[in-house]
Length: 136
Image (cartoon, rainbow, N blue to C red; front, side, top):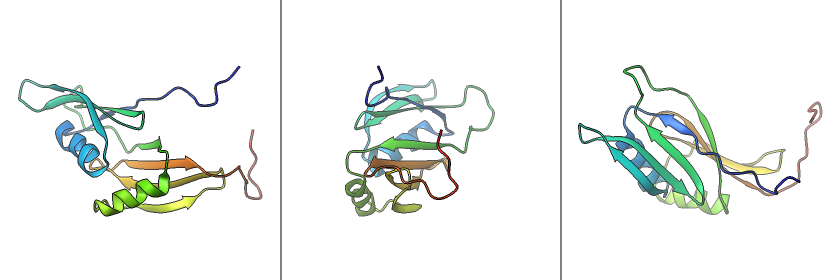
């Protein structure tokens, strides 16, 4: 028997500055901080942020190499249009405006400081595949 909603997924993102990225999620996107780990230099080595049950881990790269990316992260929200209006009110740059997709989700996107795409979504309709699209 399958559950109506899958278990949550918490991506781990490697970023140059955990502090700056965490602040973006907290101040610009309205996430909450669940925890953070301060490194020997006083800057954050690791943090977890969450909003409406969606959680994201942020970490410095484990070696001196570049950050990993680009990445697209999809985050389900209870009211996608309301959240869009909230972010616009905070001055967050919207990359893609709210759009109802053929698969039934209404989405919009922003870019975080690392250049990754954050898509916020809410299911609002049944799937209506365009001609030529086969679902399996």
